[in-house]
Amino acid sequence: MPTYDVIKHHRPRSAYIHVPFCLKRCGYCDFSIIAGRDDLVPRFLKAIDLDISRSLEHFNLPPQLETLFIGGGTPTMLQPADLEKLLTILLRYFRLEDRAEVTIEANPDGLSIEKQRILCQMGVNRVSLGVQSFDPEILERLGRQHTPQQVVDVVEHLSTLIPNVSLDLIYGVPGQSIDSWKKTIRQAISLQPTHLSTYALTFEKGTSFWSQRSKGELRQVGETMEIEMYQWTVKTLEEAGYQQYEISNFAKSGMESRHNCVYWVGEPYWAFGPGASRFIDGIRTTNHRSPFTWLKRIESGLQPDDYSDDLTSEERARELFAIGLRYLPGVEKSRIRKQTGHCIESLLQSELSALMKKGWIEETEQAFRLTPQGRLFADEVACEVI
Ligand code: SF4
Image 1: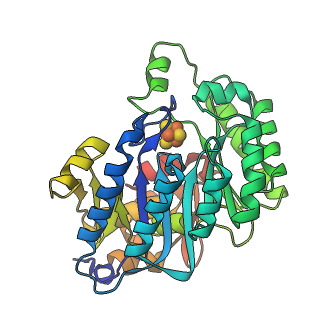
Image 2: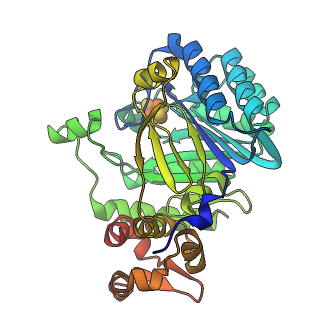
Image 3: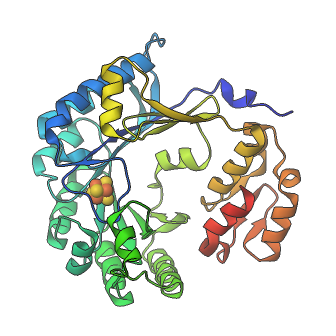
């Protein structure tokens, strides 16, 4: 029976920190966040400090990181002094390698010049900015708090301080025309970010968008239009010099998100904060999603864990394959064998032959990868193999 031995000794070189504060919950968001509770920031900072120190107490030296990702929520909603404190805590427990990638997620509103300077001084070298649209009506429908002009001002200044600025955009928003989306993409390109992520809007259970759709107050964009938006985006961004390297991600040469690649290729990583999932020794463990439960557990000396997925090696191989296909270079056959002991060609023989017959995946000497047609059906491909 194949085992995880190959990866069990492999110590994480990446860490994710979840900061759950937001000004207001956007209509489509189902992340672990709390809105309008800035009073909890001091307790959160103490708890993060405590949680990391307990988790790393058996290390004699601070572990080295190749990538650190501070996400949320809106981490840059913290006041400048708290932002500095958070970064100081992280740099006390982890040692960054020379070329480490340090990313923070930010929203254009509230990302003052003072905060931008703090990020730069503390070693943040990548900012992922939640822009979503340059159309004021679409921004309002999504429940976003910023204006298109704020994006322009922030990106122009931020790009003088931080070498890698990525913009997140959303398409397939109810009421969004193809024309509105094309204008958004063109305006994004005109700001010359180094990286762009474009996501199709999804309706998640429990969100206000979900209930509005159930009541008929929001109409989902049709699949044909969504595909048209996606294909136009891929073509336009490639023409503008952005290489697509994942289903939803495009980068100038050398500016790909190294942290996200860790997830796509199944490398281990630490994670701290409410709802954050870590992957260590072949086991994925997820913290309590409720920021209040997470806080109380840490303050009472308890583990913040909610549940663990201790997958069998076969389940893990299937999952690695499904996630890895999102990464356009594909899934290396030798990597799955090394990580799980399974030969993917034998394990997924019938699924692979059905998917190849549909023209959704192709095989090279070393890897399997999605075809351009298969990229439109990545979720369906994942369902087939898991
Ligand atoms: S800003 Fe981001 S994390 Fe916060 S509510 Fe909106 S989508 Fe969710």
